Image 1 (cartoon, rainbow, N blue to C red):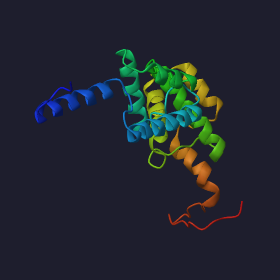
Image 2: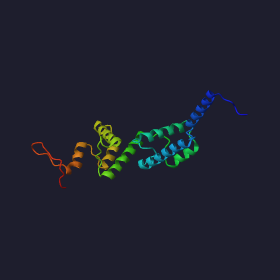
Image 3: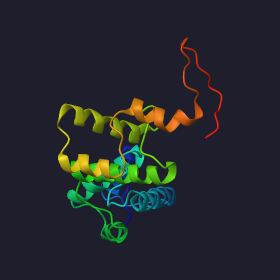
Image 4: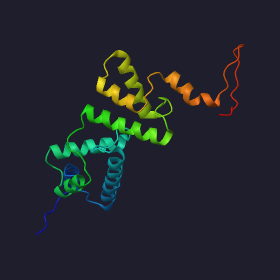
Length: 190
């Protein structure tokens, strides 16, 4: 015989079901399944792009979703079928180390060089990659960037003085300033 519950008891039971669904990351509705699939595909694309088993830190939404997945796995509540799917795309359940993150950013810098032909990344214009490049310059000036990392950056043509590198890359398009301090922004022939 079906159990008769008060409206309050029914709401409480539904709330418990919802907590259990979230705890087990079980997409109980088509909408939840669709959201999980969307994030899974974005994660897969991010892993391919980053070349690592972690999503790029620059994609905050995906980064925090992956962090949540790791927490659920650590608590033993990740559904086995989801774990298998995540493992199939190379997702790393262990939190990436600072070294992993450095190498991920370095790979992004190499990709930037392929696209732009240089590694003179401007902090203001290039967002997280520009911020990372700025941190490398500051760390080198402070003497806290390892020799190995300095060498890796040098090998791809990293410029330690952005003002100098910016002039070098933008220089061919600018006329030099005249003696009276005025200049022209008109294009010059190369």
